[in-house]
Amino acid sequence: MGEIYNNICNATAKGEKLLAVLIDPDKFILENTERFIEKVNCSKANFILVGGSTVDDNATDALVKELKMHTSLPVIIFPGDITQITDRADALLFLSLISGRNPEYLIGKHVQSVSKIRATKLELISTGYILIENGKETAVQRITGTTPMPRTQVQNIIDTAKAGELLGMKLIYLEAGSGALHPITPEIIQGVKQELNIPLIVGGGIKSAKQLEEAYGSGADIVVIGTAFEEDERFFDELLK
Image (cartoon, rainbow, N blue to C red; front, side, top):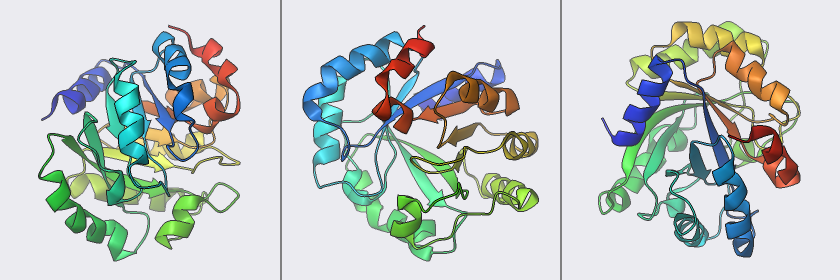
């Protein structure tokens, strides 16, 4: 068990809630890194996730290099494609899109990534990734050619998450998508959490401290904030240490 995953499990066992800030290299201005990360360092954030559905070659590597110069927080790759893998990061979420049935995103991309990962020292964290509809089409949906799970099919979402755990996933990630109109509902989060014996990540559509606390209160162990910070950095002021 790697250090980062071990820390997540220890925090979860203690009932501690964790926060991750997601940065999309394609939407982030590299020159703003120092100022932005100063706000992240002063917040309650425990991790930085880096990745996006479509990212230019070398953009992830350049961003992670810059981030590591300004923070001691773990930087974890949240890959949309194998081109986003960089040894400059601390860990990589080895995502399998278990909500879809496209073999490329269930196992195909993973096989392609092995030769690249083999040459790194990245901590790999196997993660079952579940995309849930949020009221609009997401980039993940377009790129992967998969359909999000309907919000109304709560039991199917719960069963999918549990199947991911039984397959050996170390984390389950419930994702509404970047800029989601609706975050994951408390009913879904609570139902999934009650079935799992592994940590639960929730992201997409969380744009206020109230929604953040609602996700935590429903059972999320890690909440990911992305678009809210991109649209209004004053959100950091609500999340000071």
